Amino acid sequence: MRLDRLGDEGEGIAESDTDTGSEGDTIMFEIELRLRHDELIRRAETERRVREAVRVRRAARRGTAARGAEPESHTRRRSWFARTA
Image (cartoon, rainbow, N blue to C red; front, side, top):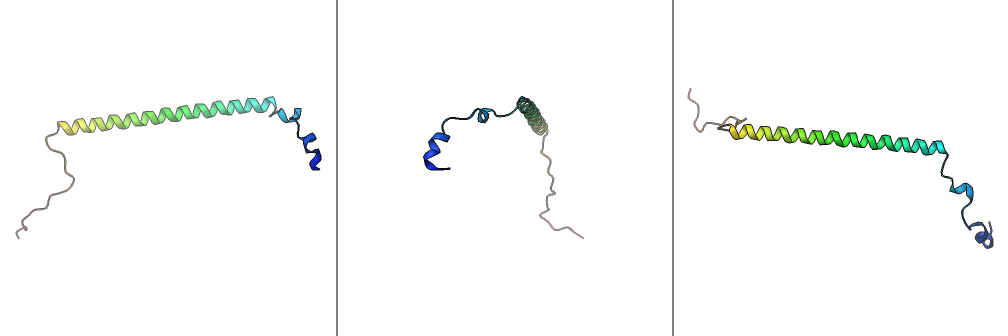
């Protein structure tokens, strides 16, 4: 290709270049897009349910702890005195 002919060849877009795909490709793209959208909606709903369940469990634990007189200790306290024989 010569430089002086560049302007002649580069003017406008040919008709064949404007076609982005066949009708079947467009339909498949729309179907895949819809499936992806639906999957994202399902995933978001699942994550919302999980967060809600965590909130409910935390609230239940707090309510139980508030009603209890003394919080449970998972560690034994060491005695200040040595054990006798």
